[in-house]
Image 1 (cartoon, rainbow, N blue to C red):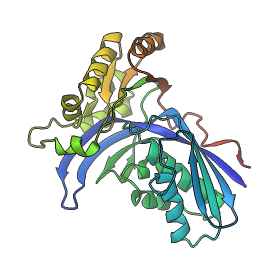
Image 2 (cartoon, rainbow, N blue to C red; image 1 turned 180 degrees about the vertical axis):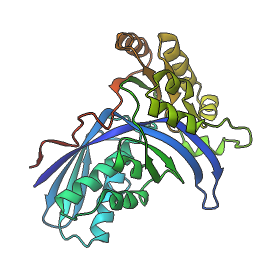
Image 3 (spheres, one colour; image 1 turned 90 degrees about the vertical axis):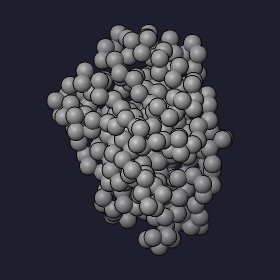
Image 4 (cartoon, helix red, strand yellow; image 1 turned 45 degrees about the horizontal axis):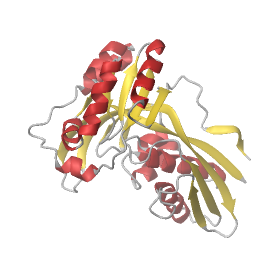
Length: 297
């Protein structure tokens, strides 16, 4: 038996770092939403009880370091599942990009195995399990648009943004999330207007959403990695209505209200950046099936 499920990327409409906690994590306040750039996760039963994983991109770990593998292992051990699974991930989301590709793969694996292994777990239970794997996994289990607090695992659904285009551009650099957080000086940091962003989403006010985009980590990343600043400047120059770095980077996204501008921005960025994508925001009212047309095969 086989089960196929999509694993969409996320962007941060706002990301605020509140304080550093005693456990070493940072207390955050984030508004996250999904875009229709997605990996595909194919799950196939193994009768021998083992877990194996293959990934379309050879540089992505295909062992216990992979979040999807960790998700399968967690479910199997926690619920004493006798069957095993082979996981195949077709990557479309850029890797180590601030788009939660690995976390979304893990969330898709949790949801898919809940069906394939017939565990009967609720979405809330899957999200709680996801928090044991990574901070963004809980949000990816729920999907949609949400306010995430704590270290990112406390999720409150909020209004989806209006239908808008998004241009994603990832520069060809490696980025250390630890270095970004270590470079953050909270006493000097600018903070997000989270409540105002939530109100703008409720009003479906695209102009205010673009004006309120904020990422407390961005100033640090732009200082450490000038390539990210260059992409941001170019995206603005080509006509994006609002531009921000997602997560700790290095991907920059631009929100575009008019479809007529999308190709101009996309083509302009492709002149100096290989990984550029033109996508749409996923609204909770949109038709965006998680499984393929056959569901369980």
